[in-house]
Length: 207
Length: 288
Ligand code: SF4
Ligand code: SF4
Image (cartoon, rainbow over all chains, first blue to last red; front, top):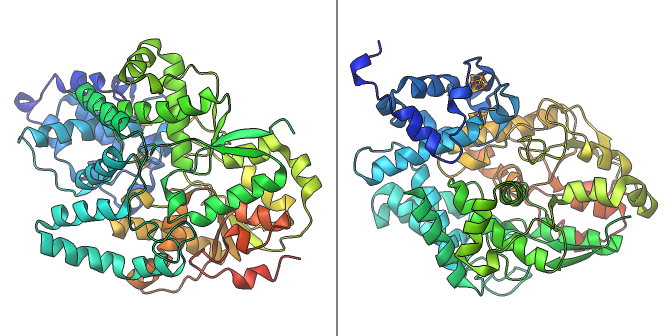
């Protein structure tokens, strides 16, 4: 049952103000998005149409705390098929960013490591201008596991075989065709100042 | 052939996990006589991890601007880099206010919309063209191939360059080089699971397994692809998937540029074919 007195009528507008969230009210609930979604095939609870309906109704808390938000593949299948050009893939991304802001403000605990992963990824880009896999892993695993030691263990578990594979294929490490420490040290761009400016601007825009 | 020179944006995986895609792209374009000028000091496109579109636009404006200063269209072998470059180009052309704001971040981000972003597969099939490619083919790649397109080649509509329901560009290339396309239409554009690899490996592995299994039952000798992230998931992670799900797949996964390179008579080593994780040696015997 929907507790009408707990609904937040402003939630729609909050989403529509986010880039990507603009077309929320175009949805006419046909469910084409859900029917074609590859995640719905594997996780029956996953229902983008329902997330949209709940957002339209103003069920802010339920939407933002829904763990299913974090298993969208951003594969754009729903966006391509929606008869109303809702742009669901981008819309779900807009909702995730609202959830992240709520978490930053201490109003929500996100039950998924995905924001930690994205943030660790982007930190390496901000710092070096390019993705640095090892730097990403060194930040992500300890944060996900809650401690440095547990993080190292989890990282070893995931990377032990995979890392050796990359090493023997010459994609990372001394066997690489492009220098002795390929992939082990970060690849850095020269103009790092511009990365700082870009990230600062984008962060300001998100506020 | 209308194209003789392009700005080349390799993308982050080109430096490590997708080295073979990078090497084979360079080798193929050299053979075709198309000069590739690497985008000087290029930066990451933000991949799928930059969820804030403003960040994507600013990051990609810089790469577009560098190519534009050289008056060259910008080509990338990565589907998600392509998507990010192309949607940025669209947004900056459509929205003058946004474009002005992005220029305001730093003058090096000034992009005026005079060059476009392209994916390698699109350039090969539609710009270089099948006739031109045909005239340069010297070998028959006598392999049964499952053409896997992944997400951003045929969607979303604003940036796609192939049919959303049944893309054909890779099929055309495979037929041209003498390969056999196995029935694979229901898998062609299904996501590989890559975006969840590090946060929900269980789901990601299931998705990748589905694609690889279908290729196998369709009788494919290998899966062909055109994106380094799909390569990471389907090739580099294949052994992890086998271990986690307690199954055997052993399906070679080869970039379309590698397959085309073989048909153009380029040496397997120059195409990085020893760098694909699942062994490709056996297949090389079928290139005649
Ligand atoms: S396909 Fe579009 S209109 Fe239909 S339910 Fe999904 S978002 Fe709404
Ligand atoms: S983008 Fe997300 S919601 Fe849309 S079809 Fe893909 S996984 Fe489903």
